[in-house]
Image (tube, rainbow, N blue to C red):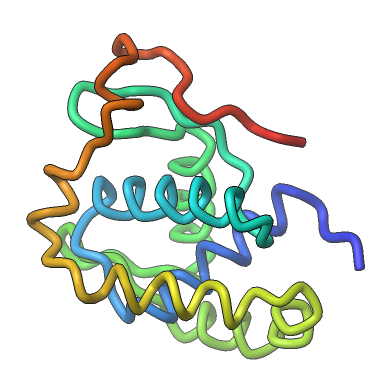
Amino acid sequence: MIVKRDVLNKLLLLKVLELTNKVPSGLVLQKMVFDLERNLRIKKGVTFNYEFVRSLSYPYSRELQYDLDFLLSQGLVIKRGSLYSLGEKGRAAVIKAKPIYMQLGIDTSFENMIKQFNKIPFSSIYESESSTIKSKNVGEVIEPEWY
């Protein structure tokens, strides 16, 4: 099954929000997606395809922010204060996309990585920059798109 990159990125964002239940800020979501993308690429799993640059204090993807804004505008994701979670439309989209997730093998790999993320206090996510990120200048690409 071939899924367009922009569609896959959005489906994966919905899956992350389903599995985490809620994310406390856009910064945490950016860092979480960055870590998922890097780790799943190493494991050769299906993952996001965003380009991340070094921001002042964390990896940042403009395309990820656009996708999140799109999902918010469509009512698939809701934001209360700085907290992001799935809306009813988002839950319905995840259920409808279940065959795609299963065929691509996303459920297992994502669930395992999200379980690991859920064990980490969100405050430590802010502080967990690797030397790879710190060695880059602000605005420099730290994780390129692959396709």
